[in-house]
Amino acid sequence: MRSSQHAAPQAAIAGDGAVEDTTIRRVCAHLIDPHHHAVCQVCCGMRLCLDCAGAHLCTNECAARGCLPGLCVKEMRDGVVATEFGVR
Image 1 (cartoon, rainbow, N blue to C red):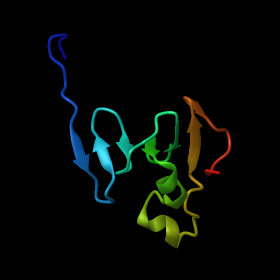
Image 2 (image 1 turned 180 degrees about the vertical axis):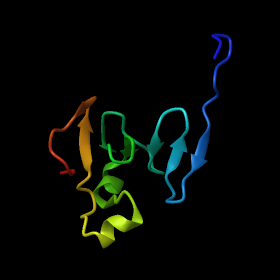
Image 3 (image 1 turned 30 degrees about the vertical axis):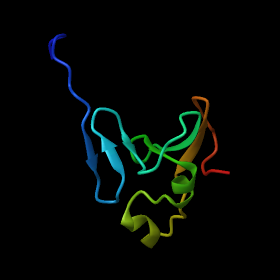
Image 4 (image 1 turned 120 degrees about the vertical axis):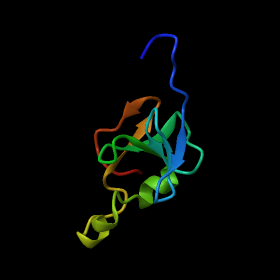
């Protein structure tokens, strides 16, 4: 891409209702606090509000395999990702 050409941010709604910013990463459909939220690295860095993070399952198959909601996410505070999984 030439420096004079810039890709305009585009948003799309994913099948699970999450909003996808195609230039950055997926986010839940709620307002995200930039200082305190959660991320799911399994879902390529999907950003989630804390309410959605506690109920998050990456795919429909996760529940069938026995995965527990929210255990694939890590809490993020002021730009620092927690070392443990889950939100508190």
